[in-house]
Image (cartoon, rainbow, N blue to C red; front, side):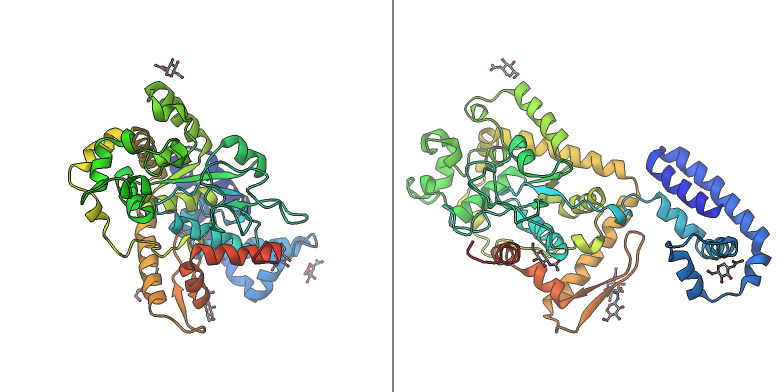
Length: 430
Ligand SMILES: *[C@@H]1O[C@H](CO)[C@@H](O)[C@H](O)[C@H]1NC(C)=O
Ligand SMILES: *[C@@H]1O[C@H](CO)[C@@H](O)[C@H](O)[C@H]1NC(C)=O
Ligand SMILES: *[C@@H]1O[C@H](CO)[C@@H](O)[C@H](O)[C@H]1NC(C)=O
Ligand SMILES: *[C@@H]1O[C@H](CO)[C@@H](O)[C@H](O)[C@H]1NC(C)=O
Ligand SMILES: *[C@@H]1O[C@H](CO)[C@@H](O)[C@H](O)[C@H]1NC(C)=O
């Protein structure tokens, strides 16, 4: 009977609206407590060895006889009595479904949008489970083994074939987005995750990192980028695809090229709606922790799976030397597609967070604490046998952060991708 109540509660949690759910939950808890109080004598007489009961409960190979069934029911009652509140919380919490973690993920790794931080999560997840990644050949024309393409989407020639008897699980290296190309190479049930950063921040980071030659080699003066942004068309390379600064985020999200020449509000709107139906989540770099918690819930991953250290954060903060204060306004006019894209998914993220309910903020607080403890532990260069225990919470079993976890969280993406390449194809050079 009580087993059935628990299952019913889980089913309700998944299928029924919140208010109805709380009411039903209240009724059920009341009834369960009532029943327990009435059965308490019987339970105490039981006086059985806990381990024995546990193993009886877990043994699914034989159909239990009547005595065994009675014992199982009794032991469930003891558990319930001790943690009625706890289990009711668990039943109502989204994302504690560890059984069905999503293992097919496509992550669109947009340049200079904090995407290495997010990518490390996917690399670690797949590494721990020996999943198969979509990889470029080690030697490709971009000179980076972690880049599939800067100009096109997935093709048979820019990625390696699947290893024998395997299919792809995870894509998280740089490539342009195209729904049909992604669909062609990835399983049907793949969950799509993107990332975006505030466009002007992304632009400054791009200037600092790529130092585009059509700006810094062609324009004279102390502030070439300021001259550039006041008349970008004059300096832009011949094709949109060769540019780092012409709405690059929209370009990597697969916006059609004609929109870069002529903006069209209604067409942009249609594309945004289409992207929103294809991507389960677009991470917003400015709301990184919030985004990652949402992602954890959507993917049914554990808290440990998504803990991250801040990576690739520009150490030499000379970005601000490259621009002047008025540049932002000019950039906003130029990067219309990027701003539409960013603002659309920023609003969408806010609304997705609202849909999660008040419990989301609690998980956010916990996550910040876990991250803080983890960074302190990892920054202290622990020995191989040291570990950091993380307490049990509403969203997570207790777990340890180990030396190996720190190593993988800190590992650069090129090293990590090469390590996966070696395991997946037996060679670093393939
Ligand atoms: C029922 O099964 C348990 C454990 O498998 C056993 O110890 C017990 O004797 C059985 N009882 C009856 C009535 O068959
Ligand atoms: C803008 O896009 C819409 C929808 O694709 C199209 O019907 C319309 O003709 C376009 N307008 C211009 C000026 O190109
Ligand atoms: C983080 O560390 C503090 C101080 O050691 C500890 O009290 C706290 O329980 C830790 N948090 C978690 C979630 O483990
Ligand atoms: C954490 O590591 C310690 C030492 O290896 C171990 O005793 C403990 O059970 C671990 N805790 C968890 C939750 O895995
Ligand atoms: C991981 O996969 C490779 C081949 O893809 C296989 O050779 C290896 O045994 C697997 N390792 C584990 C631990 O499953």
